[in-house]
Figure (cartoon, rainbow over the protein chains, first blue to last red):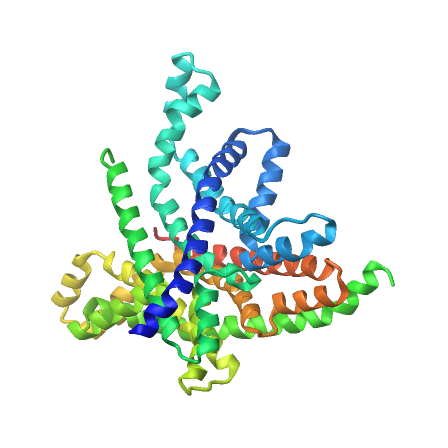
Length: 213
Length: 216
């Protein structure tokens, strides 16, 4: 028991990093994904092609590969980001690709009548999007988005692969240093606790938003 | 040497990585699919203790990162004295992880089948195993095909995690060549390789889904 208390600070610091990365990433992906989704739905053909290429590549290749590429290769081109920035960049690009497709499907599922009604009311396209379409889309994509958010939380463990001291890496280092696997069980309990909390939060969020469905 | 010669020189090594990736992929699917089916059946109709155990299993294996489970198999088990060969350890981690997701997918599929099917089967005098085998599971297969195919495509990308536990898959070999030659070409090749594989799988599974959904 004392042992658990002694290793807890190390693990909690790792958790702090995991959560920091997670929150920053989750905040950043929404503007990116919404704009990309709108671009895919109603942008000029070259933009549609470009975005299609983006989602194809970023969803078709492993996150770890993208992380390695941004972290190891960009310095070779002279671009030197701090580890945190590289990690956030890789995650945002990856998760935003998935989220773009989710939001795009949501936008395309909105009845065309909404656009017609907005036009009849004299709204411009940006106004239609901002006041009519996107609010409805958000409600529809919430389940898929929450699912993606859960997966992203578990993916934050990947930063351990590039040497960042997140929860997983801290646990591994304690295990290999002390040659006791207790740290793994503590980390495991922390992960389960956080994902259960997230599941609970997202379920409540979904319930709140689906009162009209 | 020019770029083309360099690519041809490193390609065999990267394809060696593809070999390991493919092995882990196929073996994982071979074991995870039956595991998912058994788990789903157990959850739907097993004794309470099995249901409780399976609930714990899916909660734990879906609630923690795959990388964490891989680390556990590769670094924690040896501390406990369990020394598995590397391939077995990683494949076990993948099978248990994907088995948990597939259990939930199949369970959702089974529970979505109309109760009337069970009643009709009972009226026809079919026993429970017969009902499952001849009526429910065939219908379930069609319904769970899209999410299952989605998981199968995700598996290809998750095999990249093998690089983190030191196994020579595509990503690790590409990284090694990069650090040795300080040239980004291996990464570009790895990107293209993964992209091709996932695109081919997506197309294949799309065709499979189309074939099976003719009655929906």
